[in-house]
Amino acid sequence: MSTSRIEHDFLGERSLPDSAYYGIQTLRGMENFAITGIPINSEPLFVQALAYVKKGAALANKELGVLAPAIADAIAAACDRVATGEFDQQFLTDMIQGGAGTSVNMNANEVIANVALEIMGHQKGEYQYCHPNNHVNCSQSTNDAYPTAFRIALNNKLVGYRETLGALAESFAQKGEEFRDVLKMGRTQLQDAVPMSMGDEFRAFATNLREELLRIDDSRRLIDEINMGATAIGSRINAPTGYPDIVTAHLRTITGLDLVLAGDLFEATYDTGAYVQLSGVLKRTAVKLSKICNDLRLLSSGPRTGFNEINLPALQPGSSIMPGKVNPVVPEVVNQTAFYVIGADLTVTMAAEAGQLQLNVMEPVISFALFTSISYMTNACRTLREKCVVGITANKEHAESLVRNSIGIVTQLNPVIGYEASADIAKEALKTGKSVHDIAVTERGLLTQEKWDEIFTFENLIRPVFMK
Image (cartoon, rainbow, N blue to C red; front, side, top):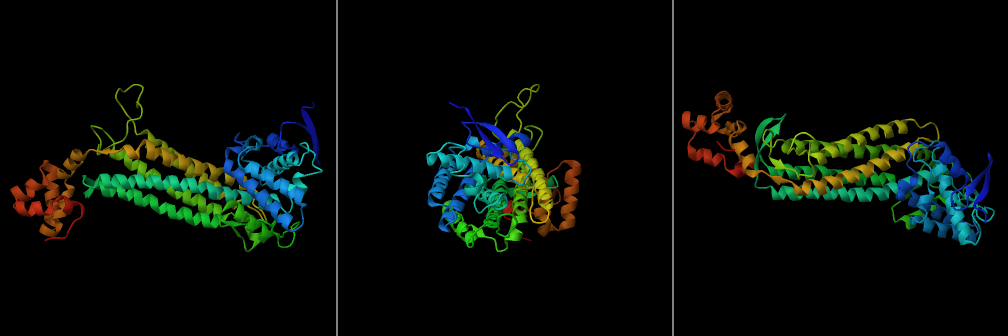
């Protein structure tokens, strides 16, 4: 039996292994684009989305009488199998490539054609019965099939990311409830400010991240707009009348997404604004997440010479030379992930700007940047939640002692004894090491012990009530 087959394109002939469902154009793409070493099958949702697009096209072409029912049905059945992940290992072109994604599109066309051929009882490569271009790619171009699949995959990938980010926010909210009775000193510019509850601090982390869930929803609505049926540049060349609306309707049914056909297919074919928006949202969340991790590192610093207000879970020894040292490794790795995402946003920005005339050929690097950023952010949120946040404990007595011995509590006295007197007390306390209480009550008699106790209750420290 033959172990290989010969395929041809207008550049010539090439030999492919009989076991390969991909064809000659995929082979050329594999040879030409050895860039990241990361094939498109590293993003299974992208492969799935390509199958959805090809199935939607086949059903629309069948409905419009452009494809014979037997061929369209075989393509649709092949797409169903590809969508399950059965043929993921046949999607081998690099994530970053020239040609605006043509190699990705042809990889999908060839795999689906050969699976369809087997369903129809033919051999791989017998393209006279089901051809990658003539049949699987019918009424399409890379320039509408690729971005449509990309948007479908992004939409589905964002679902998992949103759930993970939401779970992280919820874990901070739960810690907020757990720490509601922990008194601590708030700080501005790394200097003592005024007292607060540690619960409020952690609830604020939750609120900060929950805002990002709304931004994800906004971005998904932008990504719902597709240009399927635009074909090469938006003019609908080689597509039958009515095809764009019909294929979009099929894709809504297949994917379960609220996909809408762009009103201007010329504009939609080159526009990458939705990607810039999504990338900005990912960057914004990365910045927030990194800031929170900075705070966790500060709050857990020490244990003897730092803030030491909270304890992070001890996950591994922190030094090869310093015994007993434990580092905040999870916040550190999340910081680094955020730095990557922030850099990837610049890549998306530059690639979006680099589009020329009727097409942006840089979409593959945009897809790579967004797919990796979403994956990394998902992993970072999950890691931070599972290996750090849920295990955080508070050093309640120590945190409260810092408040009681702080000069910052003098701010509470402003309405009672005035700013000038309060500032003078703070100055003396800082110079002598005496407590604010001893100077204000014992030495100067500016207020009674009863008044002091009224002002400095736990509730009044964390929810100050104006009093004179």
